[in-house]
Length: 168
Ligand code: FES
Image 1 (tube, rainbow, N blue to C red):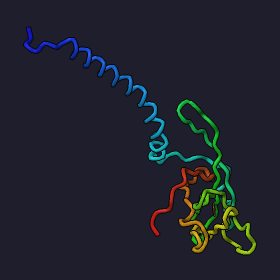
Image 2 (image 1 turned 90 degrees about the vertical axis):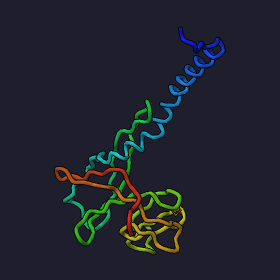
Image 3 (image 1 turned 30 degrees about the vertical axis):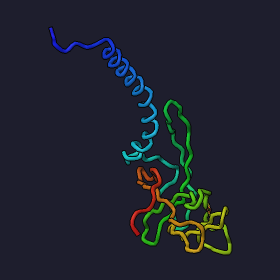
Image 4 (image 1 turned 60 degrees about the vertical axis):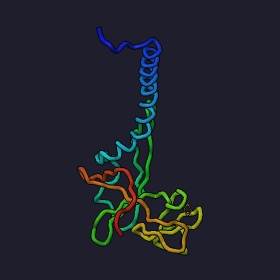
């Protein structure tokens, strides 16, 4: 027989702590998973969504490309439509920009303010961006438009999740 006997009080304390911890973990895990799930999905980096845009049809003029995908938040699944401004730059490289203004999140349009041609314009507070997405000093946005990673497959443009621009 062991010398270390467990008193009734200790037994109850251990049991309640164990059961309480188990229940807390059971309640917290879905919350933690719900919070970090989008982050984990983004880190996979392989979620390219097909668009109806043919790469061969892209020119130097930005065109609006809408693409829809299914998004699952916990048990709720919904269709989400994102938009990109896409064109080919002087080197023939594809540029895919997020239309979400970096000031307060309104949607920017291409060439919509005739006073400032060939710029992206945000109507909310008159934010402006160069064609490559660089924010124009003296207007409210303090950062360039996010960029979409992209790839071409079977002649069509595929887009992933927009990310802030890295580097200069
Ligand atoms: S939200 Fe675009 S300038 Fe303010």
